[in-house]
Amino acid sequence: MVFPNQGARMNTVEVDGVRIEVLFSERKICARIEEMAQDIAAAKPRNLLVVPILKGSFIFAADLLRAFYRVGLLPEVDFMILASYREATVSSGRVEVLRDIETDVKGRDVLFVDDILESGRTLAYARDLLAARGARRVMTAVLLDKPGKRVADMEADFRGFECPDVFVVGYGMDMAHAFRELPFVGHVVERA
Ligand code: IMP
Ligand code: MG
Image (cartoon, rainbow, N blue to C red; front, side, top):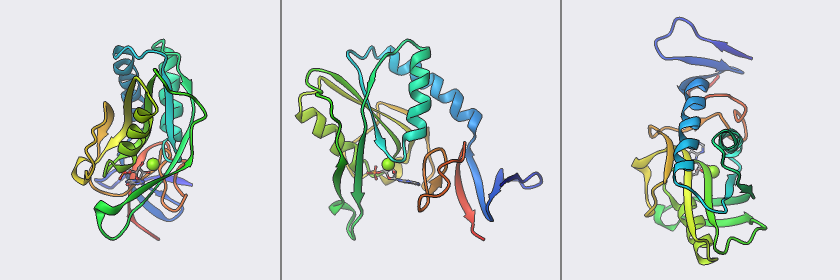
């Protein structure tokens, strides 16, 4: 059950005994996604393949794709599952493909969709992989950008919001596979 917390200064909700501060509300995300779809359409992608990077991007991708329909973008969609392993030294993190796309990208424009751009390792790896396969143009759209944590040479072409350097959940993003269903993005401030 979600109980809006009326009195507090922070906009927090309690979900199953865990207090979560709302950072980006459902309404704010919804409005921003329409703007992002317009910006992406304005980039005039050709023969567009959208590749959501699972799992965290699934809700963002679902909403962004439906906004694409409203702005007249008619992409194909295929999925990739990537895992990034964070090791002791930040620079040694490596990325592994757990599920690859089944689509030939040669000569096509590709748009990766991800939830958060943090170190940039995941998206830099994905970009380089499809560029090496002959994609004409590789673009990236992320809901959240944490620029303070960047390690790789990677900037998103389209981003929803700049996000503070805190661990966030909701709108597809999880903490140990929980909280993905929240319609907003929040920060866990207190556990039960
Ligand atoms: P990076 O840019 O390679 O560091 O990877 C970013 C990925 O790490 C995102 O796609 C998320 O899956 C995950 N991630 C980073 N920060 C958070 C967070 O605050 N909450 C949930 N997942 C996160
Ligand atoms: Mg992810």
